[in-house]
Length: 98
Image: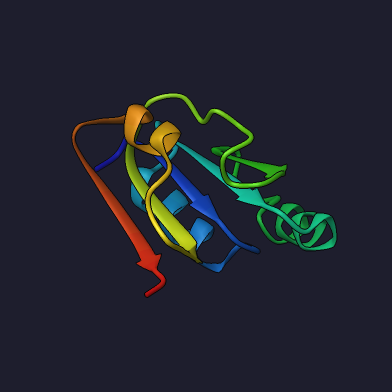
């Protein structure tokens, strides 16, 4: 799976897993809405050159085309930006609120 591009939200645990999966030839974009948590994520993920952390709402930053997306937040539906940026055959994993 090396060379894939992924999107994640959170403070670093799942982002680190995805960074390992995509390898140094891929890119993982992480977004965290709480700025203090984004700072923690940047610190936690500083060893990964293939990770970019943004402090923003999950729909405010365009991650570019992605092969995989892990949305680690409870949402009511996938946002159209995510669906638009998910490559054909890509995978989207999210927590859907009832």
